[in-house]
Picture 1 (cartoon, rainbow, N blue to C red):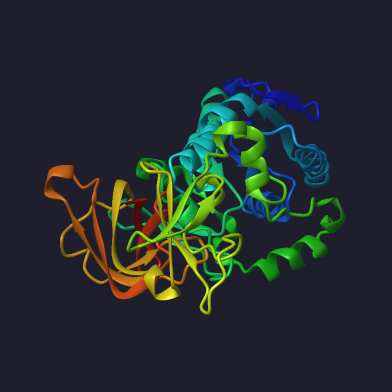
Picture 2: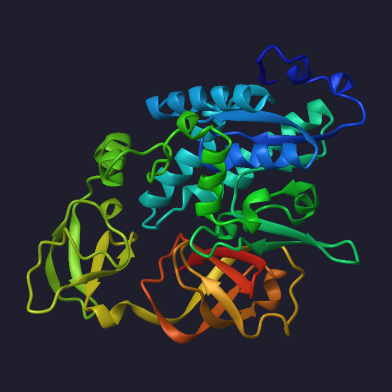
Length: 370
């Protein structure tokens, strides 16, 4: 169970202690501006907010975030607690990150972390407290239809929309979620922080993956040791050997730098072939493809043949959605299929996630595979 914070008996894991006749919400409080303003807005909506800091790494930056989260909870007069999930995070997220690179694929740890660690922890703690409603500072929206079905939608701020990272959630969980920032812009969120006087308490966000600092290749080299450096050939698509690499884990599709092969027109990484430890390179036009396979699809909306025509697909969180059709394999039970793009897409990367949209509605998503 989480450790108690601010001396609040509400956070000792006993639902019987909850304040009667008050709406309760369990919020993932990170120490950043988004979750802080999320707490503020939920309080304004009449909720009794329980802030939960989920400790996932031993990095000094996370210790600073924890300190900020404590100060924010005190300033906003909300109960606060900490739960240590460093071991689960290592097993589930870091091991996935390392194993994926070793198999010649490119991982997205944030997509995996959300359902397996962040929301799983919120569910676990909420069960002990008897709290139904969960919240995070994600820029996304949930909407319930007249028939009682709940859907995930993009956040209104196109530059900050984070629905891509939430597509692997269980669709039955959506009805329990609140995303107060989904209707706001990031500028408005920062303005609110200044207006209520907590801007100085907030930990500055890092642009890195939470367990990384700097170049991911250095992290892989330290973590994998000799497994990282497995020399092999660099070839073009026609089989011509152009040079040698020191390990496939140091490359990703679309990469231009670090190849060490000069030419009148630059080479790019086009494909990784772990079976032969070969790095395949080519010119920029060879990076474009008109289709890709997807597997392990998680549906937030029950799929139908009609629904999968004229959808939009995001291949990375910052990718401009591409118009496409999706054809599911009948033998896969809706879990595998092929995306056919209206226009060829650049650097489609196995291991990353393809997320399907109909306008602002998130249909679901799956893993891009070879």
